Structure formats: structure tokens, C-alpha cells
Length: 88
Image (tube, rainbow, N blue to C red; front, side, top):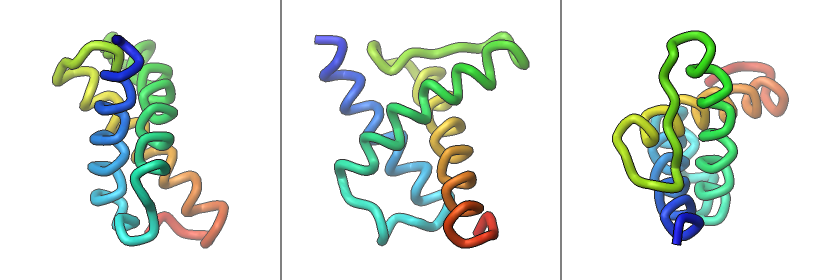
């Protein structure tokens, strides 16, 4: 059951991050889920040691969602730098 919640929360996190980074029109549902789930891993890697905050997308929590959105935004920023040479 945890993986279903992870997909749903990952999709929401990826969608919110794509809105923040102004890439919503270029991404579909599948990429939102992928970016959100990978962003959760990145967000936990960043926020855990620096802020002492961690969250999981396997069970819904506001902290987990915010960490996933933070990580997904960082991931989209890196993708924009590689593809376009700017953060956008």
C-alpha cells in the first residue's frame, strides 16, 4: 500500500515543482510522478543533514510533501541547467 501512496504523493510533488519551475506544460503525469519520487530522495538527502528534517512519501505527511517538492525543484533546476544553460 505504501508504494501507491508514494506514487500519488510523488505525482503531486512533481506537479507542484513543475509549476514552481514553470515547466508544467512540458511534462506529463508520468514525468511528474518520476520527478516527484526522485525529488523526494534528493530532498531527504539535502534536508536531512542540513536541517535535521526528513519526510517519506510512503505515508502522507505535509513534511514529506514539502521535502519532495524541494527535492523535485532542485532536480528540475539541474535539468534546466543541463538542457538550457539557465535555471529558468
